[in-house]
Image (cartoon, rainbow, N blue to C red):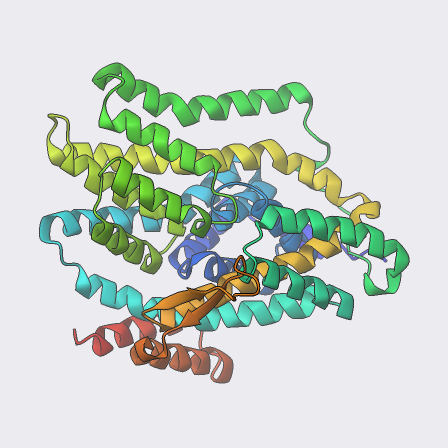
Length: 449
């Protein structure tokens, strides 16, 4: 059965000015890591605006989770591209990054100058705890609509266990889910309700781009990606700290599969031990600031670059070096995301219209629900508890189970999370009022008010 093209018609009526307002709204609420950010986008783009159907949203999420880099930022870039082409994708993607980049730049400068930003951290502490309610709501909503049969529920459970316990990389989970969906879809078709497609097709994505156009897109974005590194190389030389930071963070950008958490251990080791840009304590402080500010968690690289460049200014004014290092690092971290989206998104749309892929995509979608649940559990544990250790059972040392230290339960975070859940679920208070109230509670419970 073919669904009426309601989301398609809704998108066609959206002006760039209206879309800009929505991207600003999403960016302002993009707390809580990937799980919280995906929850916000789902609420606004699917539930409220109805610019995308559930199937379209999940299909795009499948795609973005397969790419290196921050999946939430890539998802909003893709949404902007679907609405208004490359210009729309740039607007959405850049707006998503801007609040976090500006916030962390200011916090990094305050940290270097005063080494105390606890009052700002108190505000974000409250917001971060409130996001637990948003994440819970998203898991329930997406799971209810994507897991339409017991078999698909099983796909989600296996995906969650594979990531949460056995630490299997998500791309491998997707491969297995796709093959399982393809095979079981033929054997048990009743367990795979038909995926819905739309009648209308966006002009921007009506056909796959020609090979030459794709290569041009790749060439342009590679030039955009590496031009800043080339400029600082020409001005300051190949041994410049700015060049080293640009090349190193370009490398981390292309190996960040499965979200920022997958590369944080490597990033911390290199930044602390190999380059000496930050100390272990400073790395933890930077991660804490990145976790509590809006935008992708990988934004922690901006803090690392700022502190490292300030400390090793290579004869430049330390503040100028810090600003340049922060800017170049942010540039090379997110430029690849635009490259992936603008190169591959048109082909994604053509694949979406092939009916034979429905069973495969249903399997992948169910696996994505498990991945979102995994992110949600990780985020919840590390928000409510000060210490979360890994336990490896003797019968299977490769397996890992997160064990929170109950003595480190943060009652303040729990109180804010419960109040936020009541506000959203019981009293149906809007997202922004809930987050604002949580920020005030964060200040009160941290002793600043």
